[in-house]
Image (cartoon, rainbow, N blue to C red; front, side, top):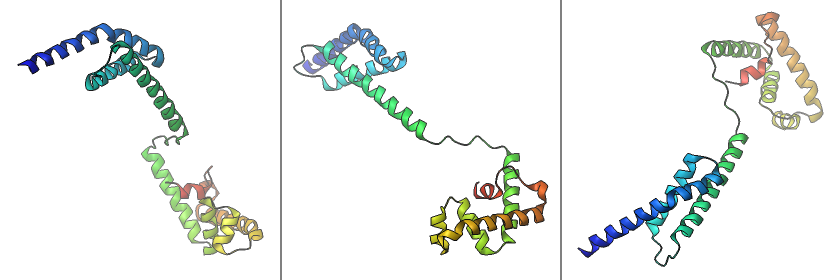
Length: 186
Protein backbone atom coordinates (compact mmCIF):
# COMPACT_ATOMS: atom_id res chain seq x y z
CA UNK A 1 0.00 0.00 0.00
CA UNK A 2 2.87 2.37 0.79
CA UNK A 3 4.41 1.84 -2.64
CA UNK A 4 1.14 2.75 -4.32
CA UNK A 5 0.94 6.02 -2.38
CA UNK A 6 4.54 6.96 -3.08
CA UNK A 7 4.07 6.27 -6.80
CA UNK A 8 0.92 8.43 -6.77
CA UNK A 9 2.75 11.17 -4.92
CA UNK A 10 5.66 11.01 -7.35
CA UNK A 11 3.27 11.19 -10.31
CA UNK A 12 1.41 14.10 -8.77
CA UNK A 13 4.70 15.84 -8.05
CA UNK A 14 5.89 15.30 -11.61
CA UNK A 15 2.59 16.55 -13.02
CA UNK A 16 2.84 19.69 -10.89
CA UNK A 17 6.43 20.23 -12.02
CA UNK A 18 5.37 19.77 -15.64
CA UNK A 19 2.49 22.25 -15.35
CA UNK A 20 4.69 24.78 -13.59
CA UNK A 21 7.67 24.74 -15.96
CA UNK A 22 6.75 23.27 -19.37
CA UNK A 23 5.60 26.48 -21.07
CA UNK A 24 8.56 28.49 -19.86
CA UNK A 25 11.00 25.78 -20.93
CA UNK A 26 9.34 25.54 -24.35
CA UNK A 27 9.65 29.35 -24.78
CA UNK A 28 13.35 29.25 -23.85
CA UNK A 29 13.97 26.43 -26.30
CA UNK A 30 11.99 28.25 -28.99
CA UNK A 31 14.43 31.14 -28.72
CA UNK A 32 17.25 28.73 -29.50
CA UNK A 33 15.74 26.61 -32.28
CA UNK A 34 13.21 29.05 -33.76
CA UNK A 35 10.54 26.40 -34.36
CA UNK A 36 7.57 25.98 -32.04
CA UNK A 37 7.03 22.28 -32.73
CA UNK A 38 10.70 21.42 -32.25
CA UNK A 39 10.90 23.50 -29.06
CA UNK A 40 7.87 21.70 -27.63
CA UNK A 41 9.30 18.34 -28.61
CA UNK A 42 12.62 19.14 -26.94
CA UNK A 43 10.89 20.43 -23.80
CA UNK A 44 8.91 17.19 -23.60
CA UNK A 45 12.14 15.23 -24.09
CA UNK A 46 13.80 17.15 -21.23
CA UNK A 47 10.86 16.27 -18.97
CA UNK A 48 11.04 12.65 -20.11
CA UNK A 49 14.74 12.51 -19.19
CA UNK A 50 13.92 14.03 -15.82
CA UNK A 51 11.16 11.49 -15.27
CA UNK A 52 13.46 8.58 -16.23
CA UNK A 53 16.43 9.65 -14.11
CA UNK A 54 14.77 11.37 -11.16
CA UNK A 55 17.94 12.86 -9.73
CA UNK A 56 17.90 11.96 -6.01
CA UNK A 57 19.67 15.00 -4.55
CA UNK A 58 18.07 17.62 -6.76
CA UNK A 59 17.34 20.97 -5.18
CA UNK A 60 16.64 22.90 -8.39
CA UNK A 61 14.48 20.89 -10.78
CA UNK A 62 13.79 23.91 -12.99
CA UNK A 63 17.53 24.53 -13.41
CA UNK A 64 18.12 20.88 -14.28
CA UNK A 65 15.32 20.98 -16.85
CA UNK A 66 16.63 24.22 -18.40
CA UNK A 67 20.19 22.90 -18.67
CA UNK A 68 18.99 19.63 -20.18
CA UNK A 69 16.59 21.40 -22.55
CA UNK A 70 19.24 23.88 -23.73
CA UNK A 71 21.70 21.04 -24.36
CA UNK A 72 19.06 19.18 -26.34
CA UNK A 73 18.28 22.33 -28.35
CA UNK A 74 21.93 22.99 -29.12
CA UNK A 75 22.37 19.35 -30.16
CA UNK A 76 19.35 19.68 -32.46
CA UNK A 77 20.87 22.80 -34.06
CA UNK A 78 24.18 21.00 -34.60
CA UNK A 79 22.43 17.99 -36.05
CA UNK A 80 20.43 20.21 -38.40
CA UNK A 81 23.57 22.04 -39.48
CA UNK A 82 25.34 18.73 -40.20
CA UNK A 83 22.31 17.45 -42.10
CA UNK A 84 22.19 20.59 -44.25
CA UNK A 85 25.93 20.32 -44.92
CA UNK A 86 25.73 16.69 -45.99
CA UNK A 87 22.55 17.16 -48.00
CA UNK A 88 24.07 20.09 -49.88
CA UNK A 89 27.21 18.04 -50.58
CA UNK A 90 25.19 15.12 -51.97
CA UNK A 91 24.58 15.11 -55.70
CA UNK A 92 21.13 16.20 -56.74
CA UNK A 93 19.00 13.39 -58.10
CA UNK A 94 18.23 13.45 -61.77
CA UNK A 95 14.85 14.83 -62.66
CA UNK A 96 12.34 12.13 -63.44
CA UNK A 97 12.53 10.98 -67.02
CA UNK A 98 9.53 10.47 -69.18
CA UNK A 99 9.00 7.24 -71.13
CA UNK A 100 9.72 9.23 -74.29
CA UNK A 101 13.08 10.34 -72.88
CA UNK A 102 13.91 6.76 -71.93
CA UNK A 103 12.99 5.54 -75.40
CA UNK A 104 15.04 8.27 -77.13
CA UNK A 105 18.02 7.50 -74.87
CA UNK A 106 17.79 3.78 -75.60
CA UNK A 107 17.63 4.49 -79.36
CA UNK A 108 20.67 6.75 -79.19
CA UNK A 109 22.61 4.18 -77.17
CA UNK A 110 21.81 1.56 -79.80
CA UNK A 111 23.00 3.85 -82.61
CA UNK A 112 26.27 4.47 -80.74
CA UNK A 113 26.75 0.73 -80.19
CA UNK A 114 26.20 0.08 -83.90
CA UNK A 115 28.77 2.70 -84.87
CA UNK A 116 31.28 1.33 -82.32
CA UNK A 117 30.76 -2.19 -83.65
CA UNK A 118 31.85 -1.04 -87.12
CA UNK A 119 35.15 0.42 -85.83
CA UNK A 120 38.47 -1.22 -85.04
CA UNK A 121 38.35 -2.59 -81.51
CA UNK A 122 41.39 -0.55 -80.44
CA UNK A 123 39.62 2.70 -81.41
CA UNK A 124 36.33 1.67 -79.82
CA UNK A 125 38.11 0.66 -76.61
CA UNK A 126 40.01 3.93 -76.49
CA UNK A 127 36.80 5.95 -76.94
CA UNK A 128 34.83 4.02 -74.35
CA UNK A 129 37.56 4.25 -71.71
CA UNK A 130 37.90 7.98 -72.33
CA UNK A 131 34.11 8.36 -72.08
CA UNK A 132 34.36 6.64 -68.70
CA UNK A 133 36.67 9.40 -67.55
CA UNK A 134 40.14 7.86 -67.81
CA UNK A 135 42.92 10.40 -68.13
CA UNK A 136 45.49 10.26 -70.91
CA UNK A 137 47.99 8.71 -68.49
CA UNK A 138 45.47 6.06 -67.42
CA UNK A 139 44.61 5.33 -71.05
CA UNK A 140 48.30 4.91 -71.89
CA UNK A 141 48.86 2.54 -68.98
CA UNK A 142 45.68 0.53 -69.56
CA UNK A 143 46.11 0.12 -73.30
CA UNK A 144 49.92 -0.05 -73.22
CA UNK A 145 50.33 3.01 -75.40
CA UNK A 146 53.05 5.62 -75.42
CA UNK A 147 51.66 8.54 -73.34
CA UNK A 148 52.60 11.10 -76.01
CA UNK A 149 50.53 9.29 -78.65
CA UNK A 150 47.27 9.03 -76.72
CA UNK A 151 45.97 12.45 -77.84
CA UNK A 152 46.62 11.75 -81.50
CA UNK A 153 45.10 8.28 -81.33
CA UNK A 154 42.08 9.63 -79.47
CA UNK A 155 41.52 12.34 -82.09
CA UNK A 156 41.71 9.75 -84.87
CA UNK A 157 39.32 7.43 -83.03
CA UNK A 158 36.82 10.27 -82.49
CA UNK A 159 36.99 11.22 -86.17
CA UNK A 160 36.43 7.60 -87.23
CA UNK A 161 33.54 7.29 -84.80
CA UNK A 162 31.94 10.45 -86.20
CA UNK A 163 32.30 9.22 -89.78
CA UNK A 164 30.94 5.77 -88.92
CA UNK A 165 28.04 7.22 -86.93
CA UNK A 166 27.07 9.54 -89.78
CA UNK A 167 27.50 6.76 -92.34
CA UNK A 168 25.17 4.45 -90.39
CA UNK A 169 22.62 7.00 -89.24
CA UNK A 170 23.12 10.15 -91.27
CA UNK A 171 24.28 13.57 -90.13
CA UNK A 172 20.72 14.46 -89.03
CA UNK A 173 20.80 11.69 -86.41
CA UNK A 174 23.59 13.41 -84.46
CA UNK A 175 22.52 14.59 -81.03
CA UNK A 176 23.54 17.77 -79.25
CA UNK A 177 25.24 15.75 -76.50
CA UNK A 178 28.30 13.72 -77.44
CA UNK A 179 26.98 10.28 -78.54
CA UNK A 180 29.57 8.36 -76.52
CA UNK A 181 28.59 10.14 -73.32
CA UNK A 182 24.95 9.33 -74.05
CA UNK A 183 25.86 5.67 -74.49
CA UNK A 184 27.78 5.48 -71.22
CA UNK A 185 24.81 6.85 -69.22
CA UNK A 186 21.63 5.05 -68.36
